Image (cartoon, rainbow, N blue to C red; front, side, top):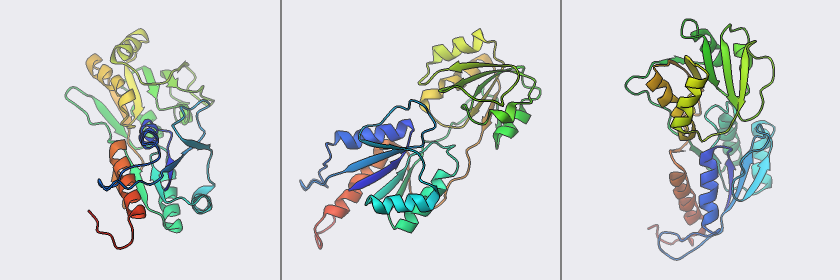
Length: 268
């Protein structure tokens, strides 16, 4: 069974590892039957030195849904798992269209979004441009953790910005900007110290829902710092979903059982 795993996220790496650790085989429903699992992880290539998952890896785009459908057919893919970042924009729609065109099943691995707690002062926005507008009156020293792309939305803002990203951002960006190159996971103590050291008085982030970057929200709550949170973009509503790598792995194993079960045998 050949799985195309659209990833780059922590969850995608964990899922690839789970399937890889299964040794390429997996018992089906206690019958003792086994079947090979081949996983190809596809990364967009937006990070210069990505953390690579276990198994086969390809880097780069497909050329839209038609190109993705062609790749699925050419490489005999049996199922597609969309484990891309919640803000990967078009890829989830491309995956849904390509899977339907190629007549293969699709699963979306979507991590839950963040939920505000007692003491949080959140201001939600639908876009980076909306987040830039929401900054008026909230603070003068902004901790911006929306990644290296899209900084043009804040280019005309008068505030001072601390921009944290994995790779160096490119212009245009705010006139008063300090860049911090770093990669999660981040600790609560580290985020507390960072907010205090840079005298941050407002945080801007996307609702990625990632546990590795959630400590900044706790640190902001403790410090009484408002948070401008960019909502997630829409995704295909009719795609089956899993909330964790474990759920997604179970889906793969069920699919493998359907492929390897002899014709006419009972489904346990």
